[in-house]
Image: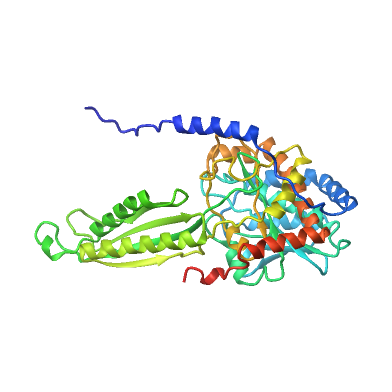
Length: 440
């Protein structure tokens, strides 16, 4: 048998079959609708005209952000160019709030119902805007500018809130704990993707570092005087691997070794692992965390080592709670652009990740629809998706998304029956959750 330094490439049969089945399901899908009328037509037309007038500036901002990516909590240039665009169009923005230097707030209207459009502008190390946050930011800016044109006359308020560091930093949770969303009634935003989807699940996520403490010893002369922390870490990793057989299909656990000792002839007195745990519901994420905790303690006991569990150095992410009432208006508004936002379950729901928007969706009604910018086979967080986010398809998504967000926010402010249904649905789903204490 010969060996090679190169890995065996994955077979793409499953991916090809999945793509074909999804394409067929997309063709047969019935679009989402809404029983509500939304805002008065005159207001909606004014919103659409406002977004159209800002189109060139919005596309230019998206291209500029794409060319100058900045990582989470360091988006200083990005937030400044966003603030400058708002100022050019008559809106002063506050940069720096809730303890975050790169957060942003701008508001139009003085009283009444309050809806916020959320902007993200952080990028990924090495591959830039491979999650398309340049599109999220500029479509949100356009959505705010459009809705701001009619907010006062509709008797409501609309804000643009720039939320730093979605890529692992949890900026929305930090801002929420600082009270930034206390007087906000609902939030809307979008995310670029490979399909147009009105509601797509995102998984909750927790981070766990397992640190095993053993006793160092000479691995040859006196191994019996050691307690091998690496053995404990390996046992924990294998325990998690075995757990996968009994996990719900929507759960995910993935981990790496961050410390395994220094030299083979010294029994490691310290070893460490870093895991991400993901699940589709807050309760199942809590259960998954408890099961992994027991595995860690079992591995420590098996090897006579100690273990330290360090949870969530940054805020955990909850899964997204859908608000179908608000998402229905998004779907109707996107159809005016020629798009056909799909209902849940058409695109495989395991093709997903996590977002801190989930944390807000358990505090107040929220939507997080997906807007297509790439081919169906292109995944988020790849260089191919980064290219799509800076392409003509990305430019179109900025403008279509801005119009959809602006009209949906306007509908919320201008249709009292819609607004009542949005909040009735949120209450029926369990109402607000005490997010900071949920995993205590």
